[in-house]
Length: 409
Image (tube, rainbow, N blue to C red; front, side, top):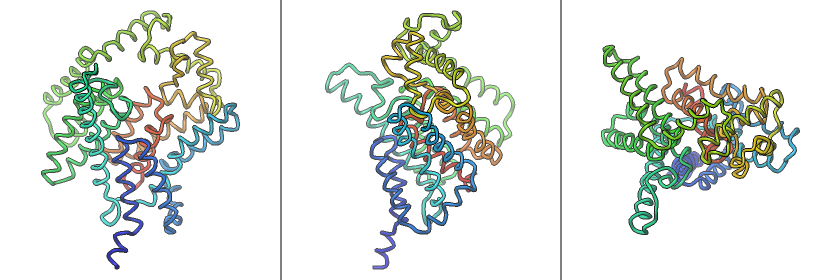
């Protein structure tokens, strides 16, 4: 009877919720939100958790996550589209919830094992890749449909940009686990996973994903060079090879190649080309960013309000004759611009601080995982408004708050 009580204790259910959450993140977006909800219920069922809430206010990173959420709540005062604003608050709720959950869960032998959580996230991504490839094979060779092994066709569960981001973070975690775990079978799996994941990122053809992959290579090699006494010619050869691969990818990958040609043509013509000359995401982003900057110039101090960002962007698209962007109702495709439009200078500075402050501590303490996570996510925010979707905000809120805890720095 005593054993049975111990097995069914709340901390074990809490462990199950965390592992289920990280495993389902790359696979089932809706299911992962249910696990978050169940985890919140478990949080309030444990009285000792309420005593640890004050620990949130001892960590700058966690405080900033909460402040960033409350900015959205406060700026409802100035919003015209209350329905859109309330929906945005609902989407951003993870930024408020996870700092408190993070303070009550520690990764130790008796509760949650951090390496085990990382492995479950890796395994979830691995399953997602296998199922995605199997789906393309089935569609192409069994059903005879015209599908390819690239971009949307190969990304079954998430948008290619989000899928690439998840995989790259899982590669970071895989590299970390490879250096800390001694079991040969696990090391062998991690090697296979990392190599196959690199290939899968190229198949996804996400521009930000491919560029992020090279950023990780630079970070990893820089850390390796710092720890090992390696001859200068080896360092030079390694860096030269990475640069060569990066340049080559722009000529080999059709999406990257097209992006560069569109950007080059617009720079040559000072971005005065007809925006409707193009009908792809490469051109859309250039003109959307231009429209976003124009909006920021008009509302740089206080922003337009929580629920009015999309409406104001659509109005700006109409003014600038961006027919494609207006019809698709596209967001800013840049989290920094999106936040600046909505909340002005203060909101932008808080978002910027979310990365800078933890990054300072992470670099100071040589924390490879947190450093890489912050750099990669900050880089991806340049190309996507990732905090506008559950796939982006739940992922960011979970890993940010758990990795930014002082016990991990």
